[in-house]
Length: 470
Ligand SMILES: Cc1ncc(C[n+]2csc(CCOP(=O)(O)OP(=O)(O)O)c2C)c(N)n1
Image (cartoon, rainbow, N blue to C red; front, side, top):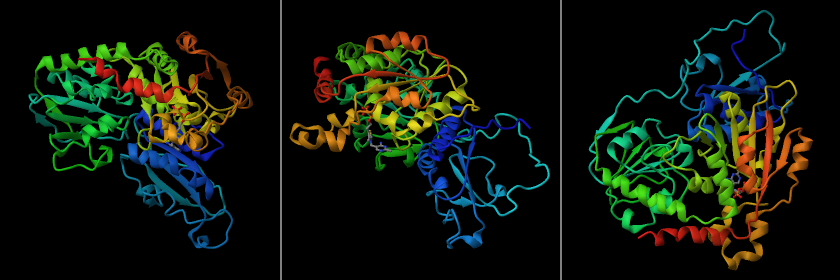
């Protein structure tokens, strides 16, 4: 009856993330249907991400009749407690009218496996069923105290305008989608380390789910100044102290304009001082060469933190998505494919090599399936570079670091793509911007190889930049 668009996948874990990407980009609930047993269990990673990020994925799992549960019947297990923290619903009638996160519908089926006669569907107008409702309470706050806004994943879209009126600078993580706001900062996480600015902060307002950096987490863990969080504890990254209040929505009046201007001036200086390292050049190309009409899905880990520094602020940006509910390296390719299919326009993804390899089954798209125009940029530094800058990356652990933390695989991405019938091209960091400006139609991979060797030194250099500020 033309009510649904169907996508068929081999790997249920990837199907779950495909549904996640479709739901994130469209804002509409997306069901994903599997057979019973391990197939159903493979939905758990995407369902967990959906739960933490409040994405309306409906896991529909086929089950055997209840009488067979606890017996040795084929492909039969206890599916009632299969996808925690979700409670299992056993009938379509149990589904709520609106979902503000995932749900699990477990359907017991018996022979005959196909019902005779036509099925009747109740039609709904397009757009109905959008999940997150309007806030019922908007708290008006004085603009006055020197306030910094921390904007994490999924921040309310209107907060850029609110911060502009109140003259609050915004430490805007990429998937907050507030980086284009007039008071947004590109190097906000570095500026939080500059006492000349940070020590004067009198209040913090937090929107979305901020997860990317230790300076931001430390700011939100402060107990000596008021912190207002739009959301609840699920999107607040530390246990909330007595100084933290939760709100559905906030609004404010005009504030002191020189406060935001000071942060923006410092932001411009710090952005110019960033080292000319290759991985940062790759992130810069991704952050600058993609137009605002596109959608971009970002992997977790170091590439996202590189982009966090290199994505320009205060200019229009593409829509940026990232799985920040649990920050998994799994399912990113499928999330990106789902987002691209829902978006329908130019689509990109940016991820590290381990993230790409972990989710590479997402590249398996059958010949009859809708295929998106999606260009995946893989920063291939053969391993996880994020760990180099953490405690484990210190020279005294060097002997075991590569095997246990960096885990290089030496995989041949070109060969992998060839086996999966996906276009692959290797480009240099300096060729990337041009390649992104002229993407191939269909699904394609741009691999940029860089060295991981200097990562720890690069992180140290970046962390000292603000010392040159004042
Ligand atoms: C499913 C899952 N397993 C393990 C991790 C821990 N983890 C975080 S980042 C990372 C390495 C990612 O490497 P890569 O994708 O190459 O990105 P890079 O660090 O080089 O930017 C790992 C294993 C995780 N987040 N998710």
